[in-house]
Length: 306
Image (cartoon, rainbow, N blue to C red; front, top):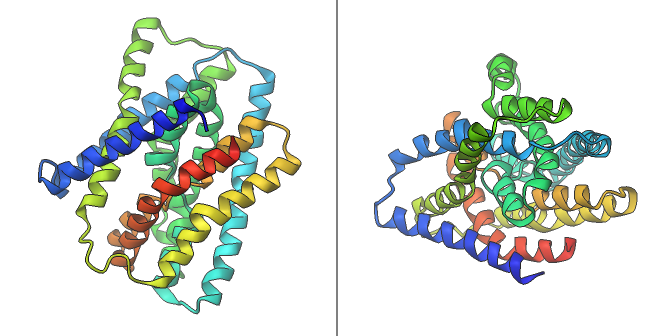
């Protein structure tokens, strides 16, 4: 790993540490989180995605982005199949099994994957990243809720809210601008770039603050969580890297998909579990522990993908 990569990781961890200290020092409170999360998901991240796709149309990049989307769908399908087998072998049932499946299948793309890739690889990597993330933004509020709620959950899946998701809309707008080579006026573009640039530090501060919310007493207990962590942080990304390296020629696609797969459990897992009262404490512990462990495993994965 290059010195620049290590420097970027250090800066991200430093932002997480600021969030952790701010939460413990009550500068940031639990009531502040919904507003900050909405600020990222509704404003800064969409701005980042739109501006990241401001580039001249290239047939190769267009084809590559569609390939990445297809690969992301396949990765989700395979991860779900493996998660079902793992949780069956663990002999867990009901809401506990549902939470563990969500933890195994869904990595934290929005708050860690996208900011990390933007910091590490720059704007050039964001077209592929946005396309991979668009798959997650459709799958999580549909398949994810269906897994969590089980039979009879169909009525609670709101297709309209999925289609009107601001990140999905930003991806569609950004991709359309890329396809038709439409450039946003410089002054507006500079403003959007400035707003989008806040995504990375804000995301890391929020992750640190979420870690600071947890009472460390007993949070590291429970062997099942470490099975999830093993597969989420090491086994799955290694599988993606090995398989894609054999069958995919596009090195950027391999790097981006492996890096996204190496992220800890998505924070949305804990949010959905709390919203529907499905093992919320277990979900919070899975998110917390995998996020803490990812501070060590993500640099390892970045070294492997080069």
